[in-house]
Amino acid sequence: MHRRLFPRTLALVALVATAAAAGAPPATAESPTPAATRLHATIDAILADARLDGAQAGVVVRDTATGATLYDRNGDRRLVPASNTKLLTSTAALELLGPGHRFTTDVRTDGTRRAGLVSGDLYLRGGGDPTMLAADYDALAAQVAADGVRVVTGNLVADDTRYDRTRLGPDWTWDDESYYYAAQVSALTVAPDTDYDAGTAIVHAAPAATAGSPPVVTMTPPNDYVRIDNRAETVADGESTISFEREHGSNTIVVTGRIAVGDAPSSDWMTVWEPTGYAADVFRTALRRHGVRVLGRTVLGRATPDGAATVARHDSMILAELMVPFLKLSNNGHAEVLTKEIGRVISGSGTWTAGLTAISEYVADTGMDTGRLRQRDGSGLSRRNLIPPAQFTALLAAVRQEPWFDTWYAALPIAGNAERFVGGTLRSRMRGTPAANNVHAKTGSLTGVSGLSGYVTDADGRVLAFSIVLNNYLASSVKGLEDQIAIALASYTEKSVTTARVAPPAAPETPRTPEGMECSWVKPIVC
Image (cartoon, rainbow, N blue to C red; front, side, top):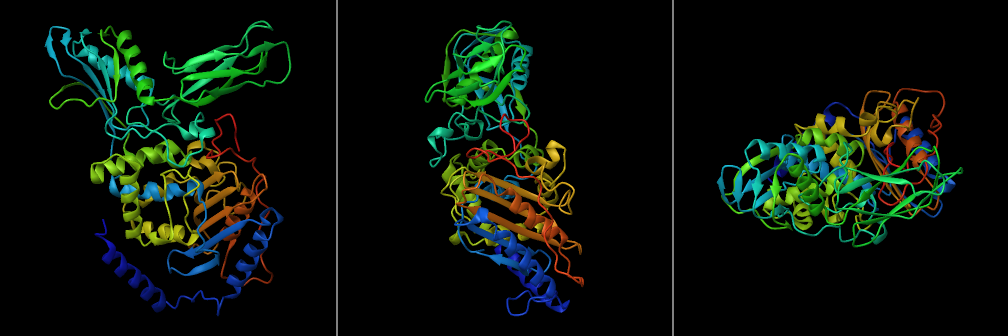
């Protein structure tokens, strides 16, 4: 796993030597340039904001060409990074799995066949694909029917054994369990739409035609796995108060509140309990639709026997393409699947432990000091993740040399770009400033935790790596302070100016998000 440590060390030595030979100004505390002094004053002023009173702030800015540190406030302090953790997971996935990696879901039989009759079981074998839609299961069922299968005398076996059966991160909070950003992780699952929030269903509540009747509740995709307990009411007028909550340990979703006649439907993404069964239910329904009957019951978690014949197969998009919904929308489920997939591919064990070990070894190879950080999951939902800002900038500087860097860089959210799958979680931030369509960075949000780490090109054309991690604040949001720093970096120049530059005004503040949730512009709570 440390196969490239020596070449990277040589590259670092060469970088330092090249910078010295070119006469690059040393960025030291003893001899800051006038421009660096102005930059320090600007960032210091931003961090003096009352919203950070009593909070912890870590900020590091590094010139990626010279390696010089332009700013450092608590850069070695271990802070909770939230979804900035995905920087480690995504880079390790591209390196260890490869940009062309795909997830395969297939259907196999182990019995004898005579005409359209299979005397045995039908196996739906999951390969970890977090992008499997109901339409993909329908296409698999169509392949089964096209292969001539009409009746299966045995069971439908849902094989999720590529990964272990630990569904939730060990540090995730119990009250997040029903929400899409904390979905259970399985090698066999369903996503309801092309945000690919695997292991969730979208629940819709539309008003009835008359007041006093319960709303009409439907699900995407339609399924018989999740049960609806509709306690809500349609009223003549007034503000909608519809809410959805899945009961712990079950697949019963309770709908409460009121919705007025004529109002638009209310919707929410809700996790399912045991996504393997959810996938099996959607697939069994698709088989029935295509004229294939399975006479036995549905069995979960049993491995497909060696030698079983393949009758249908679906390959996912390549990993390079998956990086777009993963990073643009900060998809927690993708991060956790990739962590387990890394473990499976590298060590043969689809577990968090194996995956995190491989990620740690990779990022150590890039130059991160893994003795100074702790990573507990792939997404950043755990509050036991602790990563210093200086270690983020070390990673950001190092991966610019990777052959897949351009793909990864383009997949990061881009400030101020209104296109949802371009701007992502930075879509509405820093618009109309030098940072717009410039900053490529990963956002992070938990209650009392905010982060922004990535790249910005300054006014002189230099690519700067930066990491801003803010913890333990009580304000509803500190995103505006991150934006001010990013704008100041985009405006930074070593050229002579007559007055000190003051950071431009930040974009409007965004509302605080719930635990683990990023701004996505499609979910019910937006920011």
